[in-house]
Image (cartoon, rainbow, N blue to C red):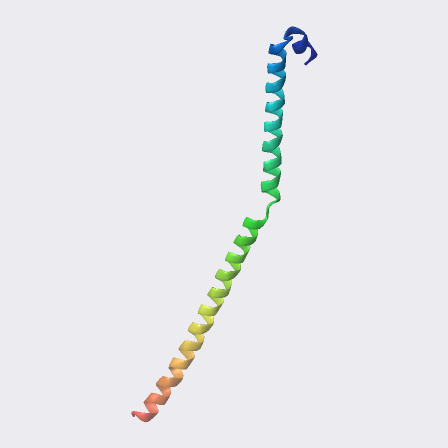
Length: 84
């Protein structure tokens, strides 16, 4: 870095140094954003809630289907007793 400063003095050296500083700032911004995205758990929480909702809905459907089949059998038996 010092050799670059020695070779490029004046305005050219300032332009190169300014570009270097902007490039480093941009790089650190990218790294910081990456860490923020990796630390953000909102998406994971939404997926977990969606999986729970699907599981709960599946259980409800299975229970209603099972109860419906038993109830249908009982109504059929009552119907056959009234209509021999």
